[in-house]
Amino acid sequence: MKKTKLTIKFILLSVFLIFLGLLDLLSGSIQISVSDIFNYIFSSNTESEFYLLLKEFRFPRMSMAILAGASLSISGLIMQTLFRNPLAGPDILGISSGASLGVAIVVLGGSYLFGNHFYHASNYITLIAAGIGAASILGLILIISYKLRDILSILIIGILLAGIISAIVNILQYFATGINVKSFVVWTMGSLTASSSKDLLLASPIILIFVLLAFSLSKNLNLMLLGENFAKTMGVNIKLLRILSFTIVSILTGVITVYCGPIGFVGIAVPHISRWIFNTSNHFVLIPASALLGGIFMLCGDILSNLFTSNGNLPINAITAILAAPFIIWVVFKNKRTFV
Amino acid sequence: MENSILNIINLKFGYKIPLCEQEVNLSANIGDLICLVGLNGSGKSTFLNTISGILKPISGKIIIDGQDVKKLSLNNKSKLISFVPTKIDFTANLTVRELAEMGRSPYTNVFDKKSEADIKLVEKNLNDFDLLKLQNRQLWSLSDGERQKAMIARALIQETPLMILDEPSAFLDYEMKHQLMRKLKEISTNKCLIFSSHDIETSTKFATKIWFINKSKFEVLSPMEFIENHYKKSI
Image 1 (cartoon, each protein chain N blue to C red):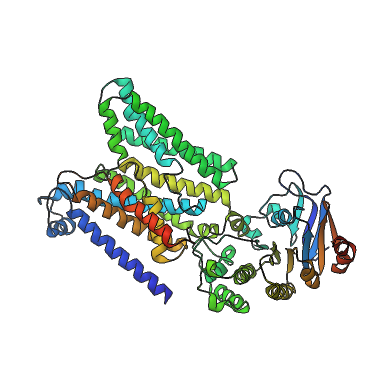
Image 2: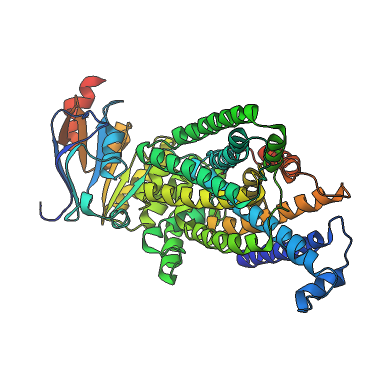
């Protein structure tokens, strides 16, 4: 009885995800029809009119939306459980800001050193810089989490690190040229359109592997629900779990930030939506649920961002904030007692 | 000493500074229902946390079922000791059933696959505690008494020879307290139970032994001795 209800919810969400995926492929400044999409998927005709548009723009954009939603939501879920804090998310640990720092150094610092030269935020040097930035903040957090027993202190240090980084970024912005500042600011607004089909080929296996790794931590994360001391007496190796979780979170968040910019709020809001829909804190359910709902959430955001402008789309970061924040407020009001 | 399930040898415990000046040497057997007594701040919880592996001892050895705890993996340790904390914040959406099933986690694989025997054991223990009809209720929606029963049922499902309870009766009314103590007495026939309590009158009625932390020294007493020599003098 309980199991069938669960299966039905998962099937319904999957169908909804596929539907939104198709809708997302349709949306954009160039009008295409459903039959064009089916032609693209089911026939290998490379000559067709919209082949290039679908292969190089729409399809990567849709896939990136799903991958970003899933990665950020799972990261947020893991952080919330580990910190036992409903407002924890991948942005809190300073990992997103670490990636931003990497990009800022290349885009803004580059302009300071080499003059008024345009550094686009999505070329490979900036991608690598963002990766290094995210990884070094992760390394720092890992060292701190090994030294400190108290998880709340780690959270506070994460927030402070993010503060320091944003100050450095501000200084870099102050000295950089206008065009590079604009290029950086546009990157921070987030974009799903910057990635090509080649990027997708690289990003999706990494994300898939780490999502599966996250799922394999479910049992231990469940035991963490009643606190670290309790988990310890149940045989959970807390330090190892922290190291594994932080690695998974930084890689998932890092990869997405590299390709899409620092996308906020999704990681905080979607785990709450999953808990509410499935009425459980069981990670064996919540991890796949957050992946599905994260994908749905980002697709909604992307479709909306394409709706209002005829040329190009609105920055995705603004849309996700507007969509997610009311959700967080609503969930907090609705479930006064249960947060994590 | 041979058949003792718990041997504590030259133990010093505390946070960096030992709480007891003297090294602690104690042992406990199957069938023991030991009540740990001491004034506030005497280190009862710290002591229990040390035995159950939450805190590392400053020095000395803890031997459970003939095995040095230090050399055991965390998972194997959780097959020997179960722990019932005083109070847990149930901020999670966890049902009684899910909590009870957690008791099997030292024995299940990464995907927490439970065997039929596991499920039978869970249901038997829930039934023993009258929790079967509450099994799909969220933990936060239960009363303190029901929640404590669920926590103890979970510890039993963990099937460990040693069970440690930190003030299990702290939030219970007098009727629940007696009910709980009778249950603990029943459980202790084939286990070793150590619990801390401030409720001397109820505890001494049921406990087989008293471990008394007296001015940073451990004393092992029978319930009668404790009442005659210490309790009556102080009230």
